[in-house]
Length: 510
Ligand SMILES: Nc1ncnc2c1ncn2[C@@H]1O[C@H](COP(=O)(O)OP(=O)(O)OP(=O)(O)O)[C@@H](O)[C@H]1O
Ligand SMILES: [Mg+2]
Image (cartoon, rainbow, N blue to C red; front, side, top):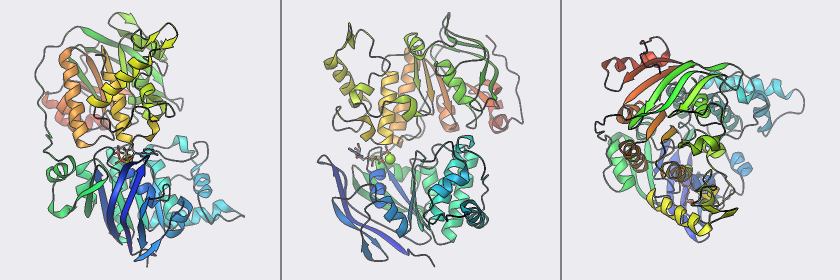
C-alpha cells in the first residue's frame, strides 16, 4: 500500500513581485493515475509544481495528503512526504558515476559499503519497472534518456509515491519516449501517481488519464483524456482553433548560401561524430536534417556556427571560407543560431532580458557607439521582440532566468530571426513551445524563407520536417543516408533511413 492515496492542491495562489503566477488553483491526483498539466508558455505549470516540491512557498492555499493538510518548506520535506520531481534540466553531477549520483541523493545511504546496498535496491526497481542502467558509467557518458532514468530511480529510491515530470520528453528520442512510457505504465499499475507536464498533445492523450489546463495562472478546464482530443485541448489552452497543418507555397530557390564540403568533426567522446558530410543550401530554401538525436546533428550545427572545430573539410558562406572561425566572425557573415542547449549557449541567465535580446549583437552600430552601449535603443529593440514574439514577461528589466522555459525560447528565436539572417541554423526550434507559439514560429520560418533566408533545420519531429522543408537529409551515425526533395515518394522509407538500414544515393555534392 502506498503512503499517499490522494494528493490535493487547494486554492493555491502565488505571485512574484505582485504579479500572479498561480491563482486559486485546485487539483487532485489519486493512486494509479497520471494527471496531465497543459498550458501555454508562462501559464504557471512549473511554478505550481515547484510549490508542490517545496521550492517555492505559496502565498495562500493548502496541500493535502490523504485529506490532511501538510506544509512543505523545502524539497527534503517534500521527498520525506513521498513526492519526487524530475526537472527539465537534470541536476546530476556530470563527473560522477551513476551509482555515485544515486548514493548522493539518497536519504538513507549507509555509511559502510553504500554502493553494494544501493545497487541491490536499484536492481529490484529495475526488475519491477523493467529498465536497465549501467551503474559504472559516468553521467556525461549517458544519453538524455538514461540521465532521466537515473533521476527517476533517485526519486523512487527515496520513496516517491508521487512523481512530477516537467516536460520529460522534449529531450528524448522517440525510442526513449516509448521506454519512459512503459516505466510510467508500470508505476501506475503499482499505485504510483504521476503529474506529467507536456506541450505535446499526442503524449498527453496517450499517457494521461485526466488533464488540467492552465491559462495565465488560472485553471480553465479539466478533461478526461478518454473523451477529448487534440483539437479540443488546444482550443481550451489557446482560446481559439490552432491550425495543425500549414501550407507552404512553392518558391524557386535562389543563390547558394552555404557550402559544406567533406566535413569531419570529432565528438565529445573522441569519436568521429560527423563523417565526410557534404551539402549545399540556397536562398529561399529550408533544408531539414532529420535523424534520431545523437547521430552528429549537434556537432554539425556547432561547427557551422563556430562553437566547435572541424577536423577537416571546408565550410563556406556565399564564397567566404568560415571554417573554424569564431562564432562572432560567423555571426557577422549573417549566420544566426538557435542552439540545442539554450540555457548553456543561448542566453546569459543572470543578465537582464534586454541584454539577452542583443547577445552577439552588442557591437553593431545600431546598439553601440564607440565603447558605449546605446541602452535606449537596446531597450526599444527588446520591447519590440517581446511584443512580436509574445514573450510573457512583465518587464524587460527582469533577469532572463525568471522567465518560463518557453518564453526564454521565444526570446532567442526572436533575436536570431529579427535581422533577416543569410543563414539560420535552428536546432529543434519548437522544443518547449506551446502549440500557439509553435504555429507562430513555423509561419515565421516560412516568412524568412520567402524573404530570402536559407534555413538549416535540425528536427526529430517528422511532422515539422515535412511541413516546412524543401529538401530533407537524413543523418545516421554521422553520415547522410539520403538527401531528397521533401515530396520525393522515397521519403516514405524515412524510418529505415534514420535507422541506417537503408541508403539512397546522394546526388548533392557541391
Ligand atoms: N522566480 C521567479 N521570479 C519572477 N517571476 C517568475 C519566477 N518564476 C516564475 N516566474 C513567472 O511566473 C510565470 C509562470 O512561469 P512558469 O515557469 O510557471 O510557466 P510554465 O507554465 O512552466 O511555462 P513553460 O511552458 O514556458 O515552461 C511566468 O510569467 C514567469 O515569468
Ligand atoms: Mg515550465
